[in-house]
Length: 194
Length: 145
Image (cartoon, rainbow over all chains, first blue to last red; front, side, top):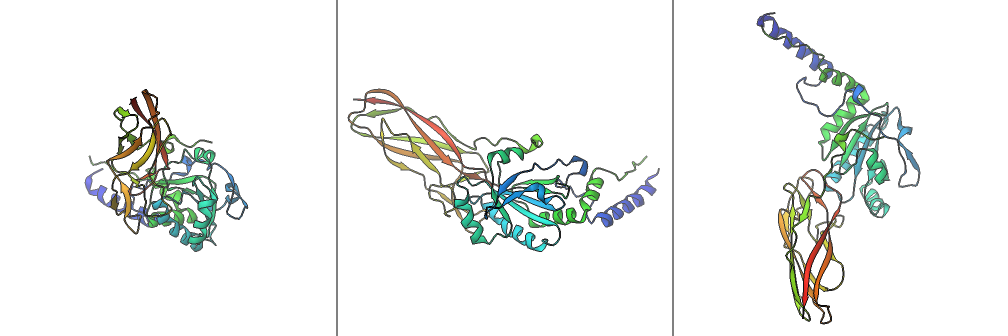
């Protein structure tokens, strides 16, 4: 096939991809994993600040942002106001934020912080077992986006932009992540010049 | 259930302490020992007097005996501004020295001994933090009369 045909085909392909997904095809998106690559998020059962039990499996059917953090972690504190906003913004759309603190002194440090910052999502004190279940959480913040099927769609170590979280939440709520992942896996055909 | 290995990389200690020189300690006097701490490039740790009450300070704790700790002298911190903080933070970066002044009791038994200490620190980069860690330190001494 000659070069004269390739350029229009490429253009059409890109245009279709961009319209279909709202995401540039060549934008490297390390975040969202293809559906077939997603592992089930390990279930856990922990108490929140009110003493009520939080089970991850109870959130099946919702998109969950699971954030590991600590009161001594500066970058974590940048993200927390965003999560408060997301919890409010998407509360009627099957979305929830869950915070897991890795503060050694537990509620002694965490409860005052939760109250002071008016954190509106459920916060629990993590355990070493839970950290291990999630691959050995060492760097904070570490945040997992869990899809409606209870599978890990993305994982971020360290501070990430608010926009990136927002895009992932929107994509997972709208089901677009599956489409993006499919395209990222290379469904588009590129014709080589002869 | 364990996740992929890519999630479980080991950070290890990003702060190390060079083996200190042996110290000769004359009974009934005072003696100083210097520890050289080395932080991995890209990381900072809170100073002994951090800027915020939530932050975990650097702390050197010696096991008592056979010498008495008179004073731990931390270096002057740097005030550094990071993107995640509204105000500059009191931190250490790179290599820095911590000096400990010891009193050598007159009754200290002569001969070799080892003083041990724990150096607790909490380190971050400009976008993520590691949990507090402790480095064990051994200081060989010889008490002389």
